[in-house]
Length: 258
Image (cartoon, rainbow, N blue to C red):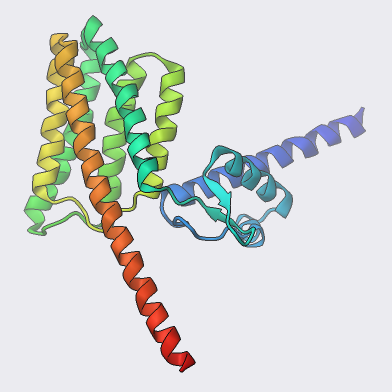
């Protein structure tokens, strides 16, 4: 019996280490510390976590299966790079999920503690805007942008949870994760953009509180379309920057070879 207990304990520890490795890699991707296209090293990750390579390997295989990592042409494991079409499809899915959620909420009317909570979440972005205006700076810095992203995700995730569809919420969390992780911003929001997001959130809240499903669906659709447009502009910017870096590299490489 003692031997069986030790075996179970070892399996439990191994599972815990795999889960820790999985969460660690996922968090580093979400935080853009591991950007799209970068190679993943089992050895380095194991050393950082202070565990053996086996649980890290298992975590990487799981992330490969979930589509967050992929094998490149050199058979290296890298963080997946999403295409322009991938982002379009992610936003289409997000729009379907959120439109369904707000329609469901509006039909029974948002009220009570749920209404108070979503109003409080909306205020977080207004607070950020006020801080930015007071500072006299034009754009949010990196730390403030992370606060904005978290506030925005909390607002939308809360609405999805109020709709009480656990399957839809699971898919929604995956979609938002992919959009955030692989659509890095090159500049922070300005006061005008923050005010727009805040007002769009208020439009949604008013429609939900009034029980107006059609208005709520229009509001969320417009909000998501605007976000998609911004992301596509950022993607185009990233593509141009990557092209310039490649051309500069090739130019100097050719010069060295002369």
